[in-house]
Length: 164
Image 1 (cartoon, one colour):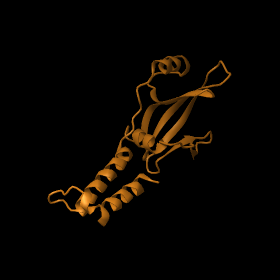
Image 2 (cartoon, helix red, strand yellow; image 1 turned 90 degrees about the horizontal axis):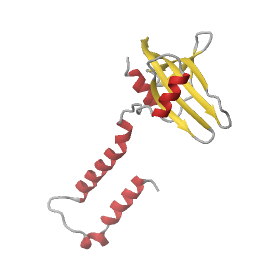
Image 3 (cartoon, one colour; image 1 turned 120 degrees about the horizontal axis):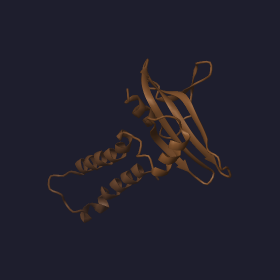
Image 4 (spheres, rainbow, N blue to C red; image 1 turned 90 degrees about the vertical axis):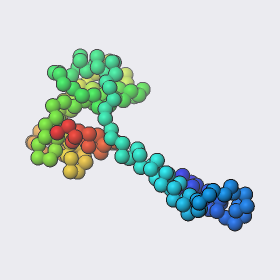
């Protein structure tokens, strides 16, 4: 049962006639007012995380060392990392540049798959398409194609777009 459904059932149960004698009366507080206050509080709780702005966390020392060894040049911004038994990977961006409503970046990727000693690194031309809220990768022919998104891609695109 969803939290909101539980809240409504709780409200209905406490406002049924059989519970009227067991309630503590609140001066000048009607059941409708109490419901509206509780509903507003609930909605503000669930809306909070949606409105929160994402920003990258500070780059962990282990990734900073790997990046220094594997990605060419300076100015990399740590975006996120993944460390599972199957794969270790980190994503970076640098050189954000505003171009026609998008923010173009160089994207750096470090990957080590399970059972491999070597790291793979790639630098890709990408952009945050601010109007569409998606990441795009530039192909060899110059065309932009949608880069597969994951949970959180939209908020990361918004953050990149704010760099312009």
